[in-house]
Length: 133
Image (cartoon, rainbow, N blue to C red):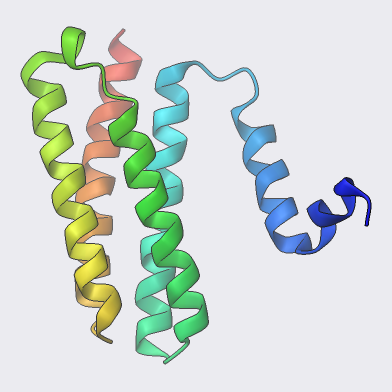
């Protein structure tokens, strides 16, 4: 099988990758962080819906996506320049991942929604700070 054929094995995954790449082209690092927050919130809200509707396949995929984004956000922190803010965000991302993993075991949508709301608040502050700079 040609190596490029695997890219089209899951068309929806390929579309999402191309869509995200298209939206991030030309963005600065701060803009990318904002996009990651938005993607994480959407994934968590989808996981909540899936939990409520017993769609475990969707919940699993959305939880995996949210956790990966939280790891990406944490890995992008600059602890030398960010100081205490970076340390605080790191703890927040770690706590959010723990909550999401714990929630993934059950069927209660509320933990997903709580983490999504927290990330929306941070995204709002991030965007406000970005506009000021």
